[in-house]
Length: 298
Image (cartoon, rainbow, N blue to C red):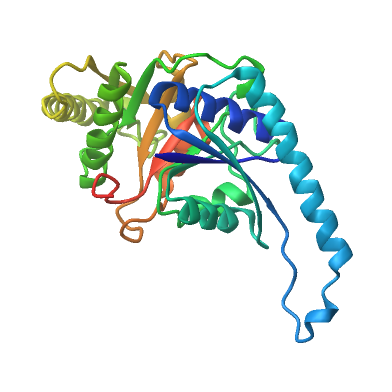
């Protein structure tokens, strides 16, 4: 199997390579490093295409891949690596085309460089992939390559009890078993603020939260039984006034990956982020894998 990593010769590209290296060490998958350069705009007269400009773009793309090759050679991953130059006006859609061409099982990219250090930033490339990719999309945190972990240590699954979450659990369970690493199931409880300042006060929310905690614990216990035997599975419930606060209350391993399901409102067999999933992606302190709907079926 092959995984595609979108590479550009800057911090984003290095972060993506570091995350891809973490994955292939755990899986033994082949790696395809792709650089997507702008393609020519369609014109009526083929001779009107600026051939010199296109040659320059292709040359720059190849130079970028040479830089990626130097980095990967230093890491000595012990897996086959191919390098692909591809032209497309949209980098995300271009990467999706590369994935189709090489029969890739996933695509890895870096974060928007303007994101906070240690967090995932969704730029235009990520946005295109997160709203239409047919394979899992993995996003490295900003600065992931600064201290790249050598070995993947855990998968965590954001679990909500939906069919999409159960699909994510099934796939993460398979991945955990193959890599021989633990699996953690997480459920977030976001405390409502609509009672604040009212005559009801904070106490009015507590019975609702207590009932929700009980239900979530039961859902996690049931989900835990669905994981294959032999996998070390733990469960946790995180609470906060918002998603970032809830995620920050948990203990994270720098070498783990958080797995999220797509929104049930999205197209079948495509990645599509809903509001909650997008908030989780943007505030995760570790790399994130977002799965398309019906991922296990693929």
